[in-house]
Image 1: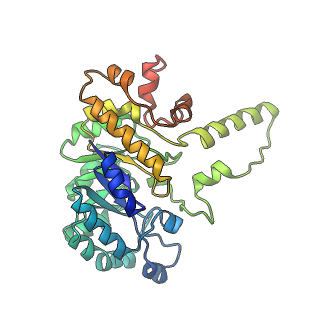
Image 2: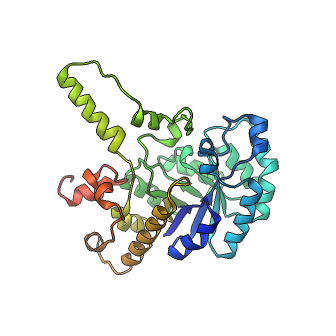
Image 3: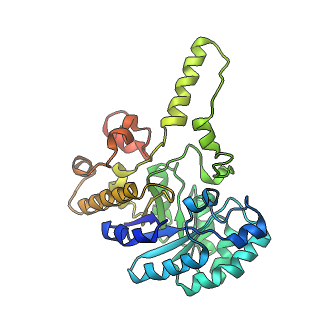
Length: 323
């Protein structure tokens, strides 16, 4: 299994690779794009956070791709905005794809089939992002029929659903979310924008002051639900307990997210993930792995009540709470 990590500082690449990462992904900004299409037209899902999430312009990113390839790691570029107009697709095709092909980028993460088809025509390898709603076998087969051989599954799929896809479409590379930055929504069905000035939909739910008009008992129940769902659920998500099953399903890549996150926290996630992948080579059962696995550095908070588990079925079945 590969460990895929975000890059927002070229100085961190060698450190991340030394810690165990073997795949990288990054986005970029483009002032010409903004001048052409306006500041609310995103290049990728994190464009709204500007240079906090996409530190480099396109030319600088191309240089980083070339340098990363010399280290023997794979690198992917995000072109996964909510939506693109026909003019924007043409701009991507003409302004970005030739240089990405020349740099031998390993893949472009796309948010729609049309962009994936254009990438294929240019000899690039598209990766279907979570914006593509890869929820079942039939959807996977549609993308595969067009020549897209790597897909990123949504955060909210269960392990059984993932296994159904890897079993029935074995000749496709499956990438899953593994560490950091969960979400209460599904990317593909959330058309809210990630922008500090107006607030993402999930961010507004987490932070916005609420006035609840109801009975006293109703107030208590609503307040408790709000606290659990909007403040604690997937606050900092983790799938470390599911690693044994993900390997058995032949998942190809574990995605550590966080282009705008603290670098040391991302580094720690890489180190723990690599340690546990290596541990799997010596474990003959899931129980043995769970007994010996290294925990994330902030496990006391992350593991609280299982609310940040990407795949809570592992934890709760082991505890006798689910059958």
